[in-house]
Image 1 (cartoon, rainbow, N blue to C red):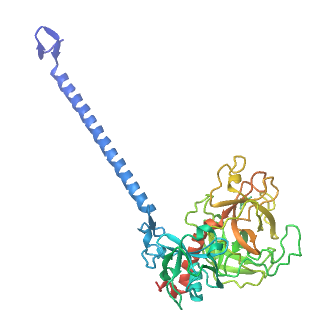
Image 2 (image 1 turned 180 degrees about the horizontal axis):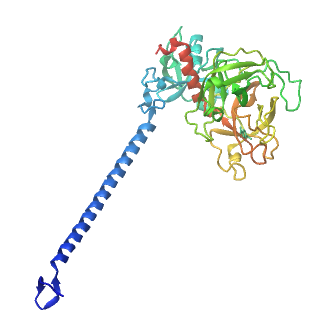
Image 3 (image 1 turned 90 degrees about the horizontal axis):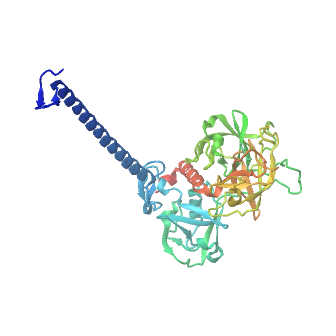
Length: 453
Ligand code: 4AZ
């Protein structure tokens, strides 16, 4: 039925119902509005995506400070030339920390200036400067400086040199005294430094050899870290105030009042062993929960240790010091004597060879999990290894009668399994983190340095 309306003459099928027309118009309008709305949405999403991208790139660049120096964990970036220039630019003075290091086999002193490391010539060196350098490494003491021939040190330490331009008779920051970049030392000599008597075992007689139960004084740097009165981890004495351990031992357990450091003992549960309280705990800022990298932490003791032969510090290695594959080193601890077993009452130890990262990353071993921040040690045939409870303890290597802390027990797949050697935090890769922390605290403890910038 047709009820009025517009028709093309003679063509009834072309008649348009006005109601339909309005509905069609409405539908068309809706369609257009929906389309327009969708278009708006698309544009808005695009803008949001672009803004987010720009913001994250901007933030990323800001936080990573590409080509610049970032002040600690803040977002402040400064020019690399402003780092270690003797003037404080960062809020927490981070740009004037870590400006000194000891390098290579001979503990050659190097100063960082404007982003470059330079070996210090012997000219105008004196004991005051030695004390200053040790303070800047975080040591409260200084033993001696001595000079060795420039040509006797590693090649890469010979290329960039600096001499001191200040006859100081007070403690200063070394970067304030360094001047005159050189290609030769006029004396032909460079400065080496010793801040601590370490790495010796005055109370250990090598005539006593007995299985894998350790003798008193055999590992005088070994400590037992007790949490709520129970042995949880091992650690190593590196100075009279600092214990080095693994980050995974302290992560989530940072309340220092619940820890005690037991030193100079071989047997647990023996009363009268020296037990010390902990002032503060810090783990590497780049350590992540259950992560494998940066598994390193420091505990500051409330009072300094007294070294007596049974309690002694182990030396830290120097920057760039390599420990070759096959070198026989020692691991020690009160950890389990079998996987999932009880911790040991007596301190146990074993001799283990260092394994190259290339070997340790083989498909049948750790399949590429070993980073440059780790070092493997042990036997691929299994049988001898560190285990639960040994974590944080030392992987110690003797180098020309001096014991050095090459690793801190970190992880492994099970214990003593075939093709699953122990994995240790590589100490040479965390030296700047260690020294910066000790330096910051040393500056607190001796305020004359922190105000003398
Ligand atoms: C641990 O859980 C642990 N076999 C320490 C060392 C090793 C494995 C586990 C190495 O503390």
